[in-house]
Picture 1 (cartoon, one colour):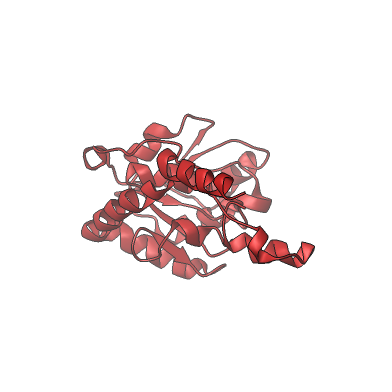
Picture 2 (picture 1 turned 90 degrees about the horizontal axis):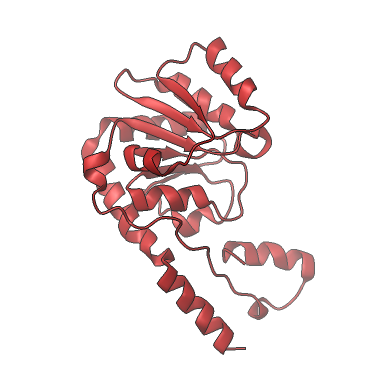
Length: 213
């Protein structure tokens, strides 16, 4: 499995011994950005496939409607069948300081963004969190899948919001936007904590598993 949180769920289907399962995560997509502080802007980023069933970008737009801030921008990267729908909603709700960037190489956007938002209904192993955190981009996600707890330690390196609580999501995002010290502290912790998913550390887990067989 990718997360220990999935083991008990899987066991409900196969009714086997939990001793027969293990969990090893995916590795980081990017190297740690040691110069992240110099690159940061007042930008919030969402990177996702434009698919409402899973990614629920509509929730992100609803959150942005609640807290639009004249000094901040929200950038959305990704393409998919629901992109036109999201653009229509943004126009209907008169959302400002919002840009749909389409399909892009997201690395420089992670490097410039200060906050990363995820609104997914479910994920296996959320690679966008693994892409954001090495760049000092503080993540916020819903408690909608177990693997999120493997990556985010809420209040230390990001925030996990109770599933479906849009008001709490907006309030936490607003606090991060308005508190530079908090944001920088969480970003530093994110960079430190995410290193446990480095190639070397994950390879060592595979080595231990294979040698035990």
